[in-house]
Length: 157
Image 1 (tube, rainbow, N blue to C red):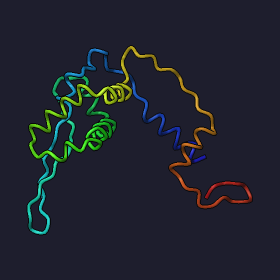
Image 2 (cartoon, one colour):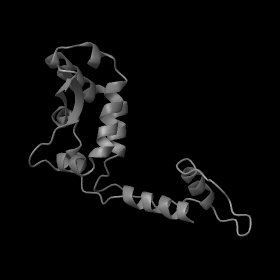
Image 3 (cartoon, one colour):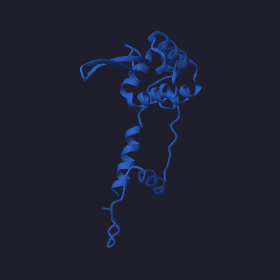
Image 4 (tube, rainbow, N blue to C red):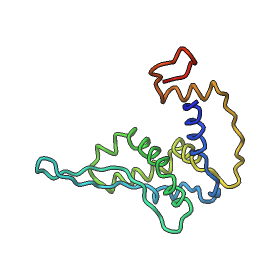
């Protein structure tokens, strides 16, 4: 029962009210939302730098506000794009890296489709999805490990 409750809570947490219009979803503006960040740290007395991809926020932009509210979704999406491409880590020139990222964001249809799936549009119909208990328990079983089943009442401990 705890697994089922947790799964239902997770599903409810991922749902959100649509607030983005089709016009806000623009390939050309993707370059403004993502950038590389340089991190400097000291290890064993040596100063080292590393690069990471980061989300940039644009003032007075509804899409940027949505990304800021749901940054975990888009962190995962942009990291998936960048980590799959060795170019970003083999080139030390930050300008070339930024230009490549911008070109990839504008041309990668998989990225755009996934971005769109993570961004509910205001006029988009939200069909009600019904899951069976079996489906929910199958998904929940991937996150929880059953230590013991009580033989008297079959509760999970």
